[in-house]
Length: 175
Image (cartoon, rainbow, N blue to C red; front, side, top):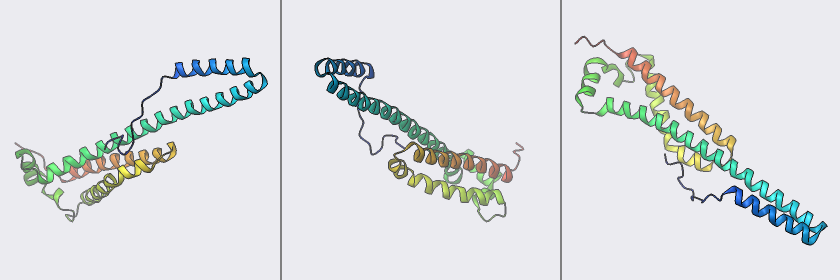
Protein backbone atom coordinates (compact mmCIF):
# COMPACT_ATOMS: atom_id res chain seq x y z
CA UNK A 1 0.00 0.00 0.00
CA UNK A 2 1.37 3.38 -0.94
CA UNK A 3 1.31 5.78 2.01
CA UNK A 4 0.90 8.91 -0.10
CA UNK A 5 -1.78 7.39 -2.30
CA UNK A 6 -4.43 9.90 -3.30
CA UNK A 7 -2.71 12.86 -1.66
CA UNK A 8 -0.67 15.70 -3.06
CA UNK A 9 2.85 15.95 -1.70
CA UNK A 10 3.56 19.28 0.03
CA UNK A 11 6.88 20.97 0.52
CA UNK A 12 7.78 21.58 4.13
CA UNK A 13 8.61 25.16 5.12
CA UNK A 14 11.43 25.50 7.67
CA UNK A 15 10.02 26.52 11.05
CA UNK A 16 12.79 28.80 12.38
CA UNK A 17 12.75 31.39 9.55
CA UNK A 18 8.96 31.57 9.71
CA UNK A 19 8.96 32.12 13.48
CA UNK A 20 11.74 34.74 13.29
CA UNK A 21 9.97 36.54 10.45
CA UNK A 22 6.64 36.47 12.27
CA UNK A 23 8.24 37.78 15.49
CA UNK A 24 9.89 40.63 13.58
CA UNK A 25 6.60 41.44 11.90
CA UNK A 26 4.78 41.38 15.23
CA UNK A 27 7.33 43.78 16.78
CA UNK A 28 6.93 46.14 13.81
CA UNK A 29 3.16 46.02 14.18
CA UNK A 30 3.38 46.83 17.89
CA UNK A 31 5.93 49.59 17.31
CA UNK A 32 4.01 51.24 14.46
CA UNK A 33 0.39 50.77 15.59
CA UNK A 34 0.55 50.60 19.38
CA UNK A 35 -2.54 49.01 20.94
CA UNK A 36 -3.96 47.93 17.56
CA UNK A 37 -0.56 46.43 16.70
CA UNK A 38 -0.73 44.37 19.89
CA UNK A 39 -4.14 42.99 18.86
CA UNK A 40 -2.87 42.22 15.35
CA UNK A 41 0.27 40.58 16.79
CA UNK A 42 -1.74 38.38 19.14
CA UNK A 43 -3.95 37.32 16.22
CA UNK A 44 -0.91 36.62 14.05
CA UNK A 45 0.76 34.67 16.88
CA UNK A 46 -2.35 32.55 17.47
CA UNK A 47 -2.61 31.79 13.76
CA UNK A 48 1.08 30.86 13.58
CA UNK A 49 0.75 28.59 16.63
CA UNK A 50 -2.25 26.89 15.01
CA UNK A 51 -0.25 26.24 11.85
CA UNK A 52 2.70 24.84 13.79
CA UNK A 53 0.51 22.50 15.87
CA UNK A 54 -1.31 21.39 12.75
CA UNK A 55 2.03 20.64 11.16
CA UNK A 56 2.87 18.30 14.06
CA UNK A 57 -0.53 16.67 13.65
CA UNK A 58 0.22 16.07 9.96
CA UNK A 59 3.48 14.39 10.96
CA UNK A 60 1.57 12.15 13.34
CA UNK A 61 -1.00 11.31 10.64
CA UNK A 62 1.80 10.46 8.22
CA UNK A 63 3.47 8.28 10.85
CA UNK A 64 0.21 6.42 11.45
CA UNK A 65 -0.26 5.93 7.69
CA UNK A 66 3.27 4.51 7.46
CA UNK A 67 2.57 2.14 10.36
CA UNK A 68 -0.62 0.97 8.67
CA UNK A 69 1.44 0.36 5.53
CA UNK A 70 3.86 -1.80 7.53
CA UNK A 71 1.00 -3.85 8.96
CA UNK A 72 -0.47 -4.25 5.48
CA UNK A 73 2.94 -5.47 4.29
CA UNK A 74 2.98 -8.05 7.10
CA UNK A 75 -0.47 -9.28 6.05
CA UNK A 76 0.59 -9.40 2.39
CA UNK A 77 3.74 -11.33 3.27
CA UNK A 78 1.75 -14.05 5.05
CA UNK A 79 -0.81 -14.18 2.24
CA UNK A 80 2.12 -14.50 -0.17
CA UNK A 81 3.47 -17.46 1.81
CA UNK A 82 0.02 -19.06 1.69
CA UNK A 83 -0.33 -18.49 -2.05
CA UNK A 84 3.18 -19.87 -2.62
CA UNK A 85 2.30 -22.96 -0.60
CA UNK A 86 -1.03 -23.31 -2.38
CA UNK A 87 -0.06 -22.54 -6.00
CA UNK A 88 3.71 -22.54 -6.48
CA UNK A 89 5.36 -25.17 -8.65
CA UNK A 90 8.65 -24.77 -6.84
CA UNK A 91 9.85 -28.19 -5.61
CA UNK A 92 9.93 -27.20 -1.94
CA UNK A 93 6.32 -25.95 -2.06
CA UNK A 94 5.09 -29.00 -3.99
CA UNK A 95 6.84 -31.31 -1.52
CA UNK A 96 5.41 -29.39 1.45
CA UNK A 97 1.80 -29.44 0.23
CA UNK A 98 1.83 -33.00 -1.18
CA UNK A 99 3.96 -34.89 1.35
CA UNK A 100 3.88 -32.90 4.58
CA UNK A 101 0.71 -30.78 4.76
CA UNK A 102 -1.95 -31.92 2.25
CA UNK A 103 -4.67 -31.20 4.81
CA UNK A 104 -3.75 -27.51 4.86
CA UNK A 105 -5.27 -27.06 1.39
CA UNK A 106 -8.67 -28.43 2.43
CA UNK A 107 -10.76 -26.07 4.54
CA UNK A 108 -13.12 -28.93 5.42
CA UNK A 109 -10.42 -31.40 6.53
CA UNK A 110 -11.69 -31.42 10.11
CA UNK A 111 -8.75 -29.57 11.64
CA UNK A 112 -10.12 -26.50 13.42
CA UNK A 113 -6.97 -24.40 12.98
CA UNK A 114 -7.10 -24.98 9.21
CA UNK A 115 -10.72 -23.86 9.05
CA UNK A 116 -9.93 -20.78 11.11
CA UNK A 117 -6.90 -20.02 8.92
CA UNK A 118 -8.95 -20.25 5.71
CA UNK A 119 -11.52 -17.87 7.23
CA UNK A 120 -8.74 -15.50 8.28
CA UNK A 121 -7.26 -15.54 4.76
CA UNK A 122 -10.58 -14.47 3.28
CA UNK A 123 -11.00 -11.79 5.95
CA UNK A 124 -7.44 -10.49 5.44
CA UNK A 125 -7.86 -10.30 1.67
CA UNK A 126 -11.09 -8.31 2.08
CA UNK A 127 -9.41 -6.08 4.66
CA UNK A 128 -6.46 -5.34 2.34
CA UNK A 129 -8.81 -4.66 -0.56
CA UNK A 130 -10.65 -1.93 1.37
CA UNK A 131 -7.65 -0.57 3.26
CA UNK A 132 -6.50 2.18 0.83
CA UNK A 133 -9.96 3.78 0.82
CA UNK A 134 -10.21 3.59 4.61
CA UNK A 135 -6.79 5.21 5.06
CA UNK A 136 -7.61 7.96 2.59
CA UNK A 137 -10.93 8.71 4.30
CA UNK A 138 -9.43 8.76 7.79
CA UNK A 139 -8.37 12.32 8.52
CA UNK A 140 -7.97 12.29 12.30
CA UNK A 141 -5.43 10.70 14.59
CA UNK A 142 -8.15 8.72 16.36
CA UNK A 143 -9.60 7.29 13.13
CA UNK A 144 -6.16 6.31 11.81
CA UNK A 145 -5.27 4.80 15.18
CA UNK A 146 -8.39 2.64 14.96
CA UNK A 147 -7.41 1.49 11.45
CA UNK A 148 -3.86 0.76 12.67
CA UNK A 149 -5.18 -1.22 15.62
CA UNK A 150 -7.33 -3.30 13.26
CA UNK A 151 -4.46 -3.79 10.79
CA UNK A 152 -2.14 -4.94 13.57
CA UNK A 153 -4.83 -7.29 14.86
CA UNK A 154 -5.35 -8.75 11.36
CA UNK A 155 -1.60 -9.24 10.88
CA UNK A 156 -1.05 -10.83 14.29
CA UNK A 157 -4.09 -13.09 13.98
CA UNK A 158 -3.20 -14.23 10.46
CA UNK A 159 0.43 -14.95 11.43
CA UNK A 160 -0.64 -16.95 14.49
CA UNK A 161 -3.25 -18.94 12.55
CA UNK A 162 -0.82 -19.64 9.68
CA UNK A 163 1.76 -20.95 12.14
CA UNK A 164 -0.82 -22.98 14.06
CA UNK A 165 -2.39 -24.49 10.93
CA UNK A 166 1.04 -25.48 9.58
CA UNK A 167 1.98 -27.02 12.93
CA UNK A 168 -1.33 -28.90 13.30
CA UNK A 169 -1.18 -30.37 9.78
CA UNK A 170 2.54 -31.03 9.53
CA UNK A 171 4.15 -34.42 9.24
CA UNK A 172 7.70 -34.63 10.51
CA UNK A 173 10.24 -34.65 7.70
CA UNK A 174 12.10 -37.93 8.13
CA UNK A 175 14.57 -37.56 5.28
